[in-house]
Image (cartoon, rainbow, N blue to C red):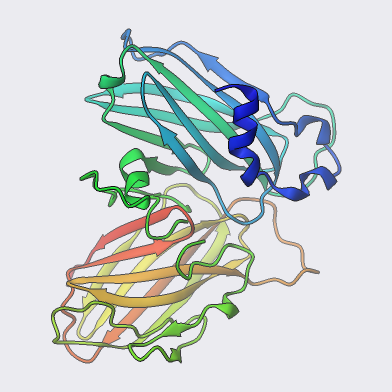
Length: 340
């Protein structure tokens, strides 16, 4: 892809406010080159790889995500990673090919610059490419953002676009993981830093119900016809700087389903919101968002945040569900098996 076409592709996603930033603006230019190198998997199937930082600036609250994955003899990935500040560039940590799965691990590293950098959570846009000996070598592409430990797969992206690939996106992870259903400003999802006041939870009659932290009592497409949701709520139990991998648990206690989960945010100053709770066949679907718990005059510690929450959903009888799908952020979908 030429530089001109690359700018055309990414032009729609470049933050409009970048030009007004002070600090390391000389380093925040489109077309900045990251790393390239030779594959380390010991085969001749991967011919070459590289990553280019196409733009950088302050994060607008949309987290990190993968915008597109194109396959062929050259696999091209367009995406965004969060960084401690904008004065970082994209880098390749690892590339490997095993059993038809191409794995690419990307990270951010600090620029070599003596210029003072603007203090905000960074947004690093990139274009990564991997040259293959043959397009037939790859069936699945898995992209990992090492800094946030988010993972994205080609199958999940196809599901997001409505294409039946037969892929399983249950293993998508991250603040921010999978790309469907929650992608990541979709269907009632609230971006970080925005209030959930504009989103209203609805019941079967379409009437607003619930509050920001009480979620809607929707029954979705419950085909069992045996139980209905009568109450739902969420509580933020801890918030702090990110400690790495996210964890999820779920259990059924009598008529209540409880799900404990985690969510990455741009800073620790957020709290969880339950935007909707519904039942689809034997699956409980939770849409978990976040909202800032500070006003514009309050400062927050500068680090990638991680919040822990507990969601509770009460039924009018024994819940006829076997698993809970937690949908949160823009690029994450987690399936939690429920124990009793």
